[in-house]
Structures are given as structure tokens and as C-alpha cells.
Length: 469
Ligand code: HEM
Image (tube, rainbow, N blue to C red):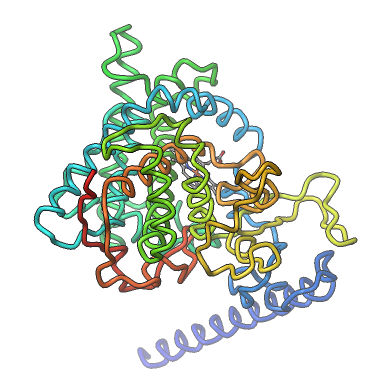
């Protein structure tokens, strides 16, 4: 009897599984036929596999991508009106004027960075510049957001827990982009289960806990009318804005702060490491930059204002070139085709479809940036007609490291301030030699939302010397 029951159950299992497989196969085949041959997008040129799915993207050379709308995409772009309200509240805190008010705090982090670097000058040990840049960027953005820095620059060997865990989590970003419900499902699980599935989640929760505490403190301080300690932060600015009350909950403000810290750290680190590697690797570029810096700051500890730094043409084009080869975000940035649709090469992209492109393909377009893999600051320089060199306005249109339009990077001014200050200081004060570092330490190997270098590379390592006066 037991034998008959078992064989019945086994047969039912087989029927169920084969039914499910047949249904899935039929559904996939119908979807493929519709998407490849019948849909409004089927007339657009490109690989058939890409027309069927954006998950298995077969052709990395595609410059333009029209995708099937998916909840994930909607989550990435966020509802437009809500984004506008949030962005309007954030904008004032990232104006040039506001960044200038906080310039002394950015300098303070730069000074700490130099004190730590001096330790490596003394010991003559190799310094991992990439990690040091990572700590600098996290300390600046946390100071900016919370008025209290994480002080990662104090960590021995420039270890940054947040940077490490973000790196690890980005390894799963493809799955979350295409199947975003997985993130919500994992978040709904008890914390200990999340920890078992991915220990990184525990570290992230720890950091999110610190953020929530900070938000609570600032909210309380404001409610009690207490005098603010330190400088005004983004959180103060948001609490004073006319955002609706649901936008000012501890949860919402903590989420906003976490986004800012995530967005304003690795991007800066990567741009700085790309710049540093190529400058040190190319004697001519280093010499030209150094000559400009020494002329502007004759003594090693001379300081220029941000406005003065921005007027240095060679430093400015070094930064443009570093932004070009660090890309900002390497993943395609999605935008939704508007109500009236979009015209592309005489064809209509219907309303509601996702249209996306990425900085990597734009920045390696050989018609715009010939020998695009080469780090060549000179490509950005053009004659202003009176014999002086200025940055090419034409080329700047194609630098989309900060993206464009209403979703353009909100932290662009802060980013420029950090890049100008750090690179001018580093190359005015120090002489560097690469230590067991090749271009693969900074070159794009894979797209993990942010550009990632080849696994196993350790970042830009250098031996440091102080420059004499
Ligand atoms: C070199 C440094 C940086 C680069 C290259 C960069 C690049 C970008 C890019 C490409 C976007 C995406 C825009 C899109 O969706 O198309 C973005 C968004 C954003 N960035 Fe940056 N970023 C940098 C630094 C910063 C800093 C320092 C902050 C501030 C703390 C910041 C905050 C943000 C925020 C909040 C967004 C979302 C904006 C929105 O959706 O309205 N970024 N950034």
C-alpha cells in the first residue's frame, strides 16, 4: 500500500513538474515571438537576444538600448513627481555657494589625509592611494550630510568598513536591477536570516542604524530649539524645507542620507584613483601639471581658493579626462519615453518604454574621443582665439560622467570641490612612484552599476616622497 502511495505521489510530482516546464516554455516562446517580431520595438536594429531580454545582454557594443518596462526600471528611475519634490529640497544644499561655506571642512579632511600620507613618506612603505581616497570621500560626505564624519581616515591601513561592504553588495547589483523584488523579499526576512544569506547585510544595517540615530538627534535638537552644534547639514536643510511631513520621517530622512553617502563616496574615490594612476604613470602629464601647480603655488603649503583652482587650465582638463575614464555610473541610466513618445532615427519609440544609454559607450566613442583608451588631458584643450588655452565646450557636451537633465548628479559641485582640492594638493606636495600597479587596477573590467576593475587588483599603490619647496 505504502509502495502504491509513493509511486502515485512520484507520478503526480512528475506531471506537475512537466506541466510547469511546458507552461514556462510556451510562455517564453510566445514572449520571444511577440518581442522579436511583433512588438512596436521589433523594427529597431540590434541583436535578437537583446530584443527579447535585457537580462542577458549579448552585445556590449550597443550604444543605445530600448528596453521592456519593468518594475525594476520604474524603481530605478522613481516616480517623477516625487523625485522632483525631493530634488528641489536637496538642490540648495549642493549649490556652489553652500559648498564654499563648507570648504574649510573639506580642507580639514584633506589636511588629515596629508598627515596620514606623511606617515608613509617616513616609513617608505607602499601606500594604497585608492583606499586612502575612499576614506577621504566617505569622511567628506558624512561630514557634509550629518555634521559628523565617520573618521575612516583614522583607520589603520585606510580600512573602510562601509566602502568594503558596498563593494561586496554591488557584486549582486545585476540580479537586483532585473529582479528588484528579491531585495524587498530579503528585507522582509528576520535580520538573522538576512545575515545568514549575506553577512554584508548586517554591516549595512549597522551603518543604517548610525544614520537613523543621527537623524533622530538632529530632529530632537530642532524640536527643542537647541542651538546647533557644528555646521548646518543636509538634514537641517531638509527639516527646514517645505517637504510634506511624510517626507520628513526618520525612516525617509535616513534613506535619503544613506543614498547621499553611497552616491558621494565610491564615485569620488574612483575618479581620484583614475587621475592619480595616469598622472603618475605618464611623466609628461605629471611634469606639465606640476609646472602649472608650482607656478600658481610657489611654496609647498600655499593655498588657492576653489575659484582660483578652477582657473588652472591643465588641472581642469586632467579632471575632465579622469571623469571621462571613470564614467560615474557604468550601468545604463534608464529614462521613460514621454507621453508623445520619442523619435530615434526616424522611428517612434512609444510612450512608456525605457530608453537607456551609458557613459562608457559615450566616452569611448572614437569619433568624439579618438584613441579613447588613452589618458590624454590635452584633447580637452582648445585655443580661445587669442593664444590662450581653454576647455573645449564642444567636448564637454559629451562628458556625461555626472549624467544630464533632471536626474543629473545633485552632488556635482561638491564633487568638483573635492577633486580640485585633492589633486592640486597631492601633486603640489608629493612625488609618487607606482608600486606593483598596472592600468588594470583602474581600467573598467566589469559593470557593477559602478565601474569595477579586474578582480584581484588592489588599487593604485605608490611610494611617496615629499617635494622640496
Ligand atoms: C566624481 C564624483 C561623482 C560622479 C561622477 C557622480 C555621478 C553621478 C551620476 C552619473 C548620477 C546619476 C544620474 C542619473 O540617474 O542619470 C548621480 C546621481 C546622484 N549623485 Fe552623484 N556623482 C558624483 C559625486 C557625488 C557626490 C559627492 C554626491 C553627494 C553627496 C552625489 C550625490 C548624488 C545623488 C544624491 C544622486 C541622485 C540624484 C537624483 O536622482 O536626482 N554624487 N551621480
